Image (cartoon, rainbow, N blue to C red; front, side, top):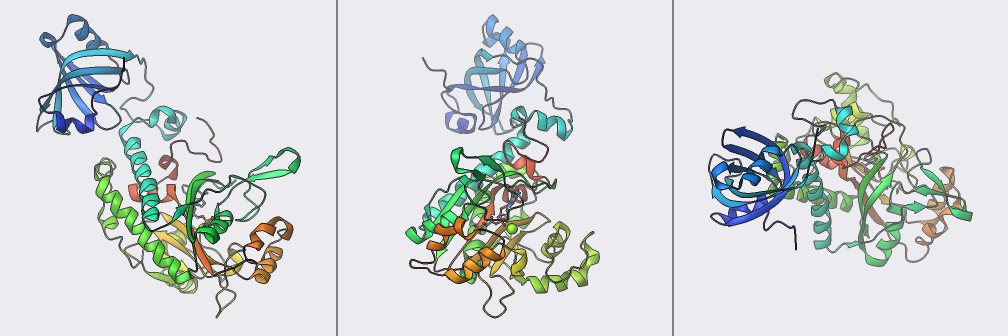
Length: 440
Ligand code: 4AD
Ligand code: MG
């Protein structure tokens, strides 16, 4: 015997006039004399199920009356089209069976503080807003991979336990690794995906990455998901073209397939519709000048000396000058990672770019052309205070058929926060890991 439903709420349109069995959880219940109205949520959508006393057994009616918020049940009934019903359908119930009871569900329709909701994240993921957010997240992940696969990229998985740093040494999570010393949780898959690039030409890795960030901002998690494409023979300019096509394809697909979720989230989609290539490009130098001239427009966007990195207010000010995502390119090499190729005309600059999302959502992509010359790379490793010995294999990639190559990393949570208009990144991942949170 199976307990599976015969169809899902989202598929009811195909079953008008038929008898179906749904299985899910009670979102809401109201009673009116001989009628019980059950809002049933099955993960695909919600439908109103009407239990009329004279249509069901006395036992089934009593069960319906006793159902509480989030009780799990199976409901059989016939599907009726109803223009007034949200979703366009209702179920005229013939049978109700309780599967799992639920008493005193902690999250009620009233307002709760975010700390309370975060403590109950394992239950909070059931509510309509969180459900919509996480659906968009799943769409972004699927869209990214499917787009890359269609362009001939090969997924190449990189390790999480690693022996070295790639994005600075100040934010590493360390753990004992048997007799081999200290291992670190990967801050990026990039170094390894570069090895894959030399094998396949076009690759990407996708998985959780870790940064022991002691910052408590609305954009930082200590565990986040990053998707990192890497392309052989691609220059910095090629890299930007790939990124704008990639981002725009993801945005268009979310608009196409997850419009109902964006509606639940009350997202203004006009900014997203405009997100088509080419994206504007501005250099770090020009951005500094822009900040000096327009500092008054965003609080905290104080002028910077050359060589200083942008803070969130600076990124917000730069992004506010454009109607779609903007590339800030050619940062001072000194404030970027060791592996970035210097600009031939001005070696103090790196051939890199950050892609800033509109509306103050900040950097969603960081990318660069990589150093392909073995001697230069060795120099940079030493200058960054890293041990050459640890990067033996990475340097090998520059010894055997080295080619100019470029790639980038897109943070899934930052992209989802922007697409869904969610201020804080903590709601864009099922179980956020932050400086002050590791439960649930
Ligand atoms: O700019 P980042 O540090 O770049 C890299 O790690 C490169 N190795 C990527 C590459 O070229 N293959 O990180 C890339 C992106 C950021 O733009 C941001 O979207 C996200 O990863 N990110 C974070 N997201 C959430 N919490 C954090 N602490 C993040 N740090 C970076
Ligand atoms: Mg970055």
